[in-house]
Length: 611
Image (tube, rainbow, N blue to C red; front, side, top):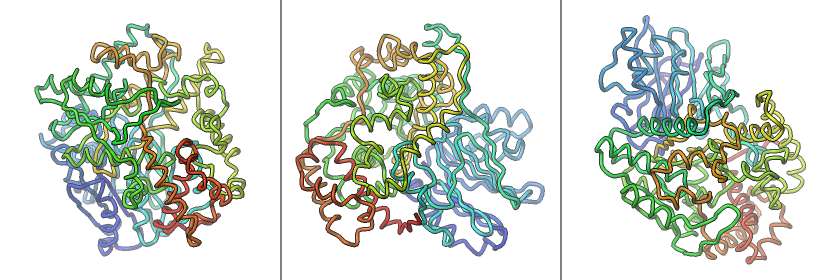
């Protein structure tokens, strides 16, 4: 995924602080296995870890002279529309070398247009520029926030980086968490944000400028409400054209560096078919497709999983002539202390769905071990095409809160998924119900409606807005394994278009994601096109809850365990004495997993709670 860090200081001479910026850069080694470069100047220092997907990716930071001053540029991710940017530069007399990297193109674009070029781009990226002419730092993120970028101020400047851990590697930054940060960790409403006291982040679709007088921030993109005037055939045709164009733009020049994660659902199968077709068009060979499975063969359908993935994935791989790899995991492997710590460090905080995320990380490690650098996924399709459970359940749509919170509450988790063993006094102090209500009210206040929309259409637009702005995909697990994730479905152009399609049209054919199914129907077997949505698979191996129970017992017996004061010890003791409940009750397992993660986070990150 690559990673960037930086430090701006208006008091110290940062040329003398190279060890600090080197340590910050080293904290992101997992993101960039292909090299490290550090640059220092009196007022600014940058570091970059490279994941070399295209030629020149490792030539960062890009440092140039302009008007007698230094301009430095650092970039992460996979920005799109680079050919168009190259043509614009040629048109204004700044022709770029044929092998110019994205960062080098961005440097020339910044020198020509300052930040005006950023809204022209697409894809997932984060950008940092030090402009010595004005002594200003410029930070920017893509429209959908596909690349994270955190920052915190110091007494004499600012430090920033792709992950929170990079900031924590600076000696002036401490891992202090106030009640608001702990609420973010525990709650199940919105994506986890900065967390640590004093931390902030550049928002999706935002440009932020920091200088001696402070910050200037502006939003350059947001979802817009517009009438949808296309009929069904035109809508389907436009979706297909946008998907094909996105697949063309996302396919790397070296196909052996790329693979696709294939579940056999319509999302990943669509992406597999599109990328495989693009490789055939360019005569670049066969696509490698990877499917997750478990050594314990005990699939059980539930409210989120309708069928086993592997048979459908094999069907798709055969249909598009992809090389198919099935990665079989041992369920209990995710309780290995090394795996648990790696999962924590991938996110810098506990995850709400530990088992799914940790199994996914082990799966992606196998993909990376085979030499791949880019992974294609169907990430974002559920959001773009209203495919998730909470978009297709009237009770959840009308719940008056975040529908994923309402789903957790329906299954007994009143404060959200994984919160069942949190100390009741702590929960009372954090007051998650009020937080959910306030956060929800703030989020939906930004939704714009059309005058002709009836009550149901307004509710569905609200849900569509929430899933697109508050339930975005998380690339941290991919970055932690040294992979760059790309999704032809998850582009701001496509999401802007689908956002305005009426919900009734989205259910074309009386099935969720009906429009996506119609748009790619000729690319896949009909059994796959009509397969109902099925969530990421989990294992039902009874060995996993048994091992989980033993680990939780050990934590509860440790009087020095940092999460003990935050745990409802009576409820935890009762649960740990009921091994059969951990086998049958996923909500109970999630609550145990969360406390164990919380314990490790407090310990490993040396978190100081200031509640």
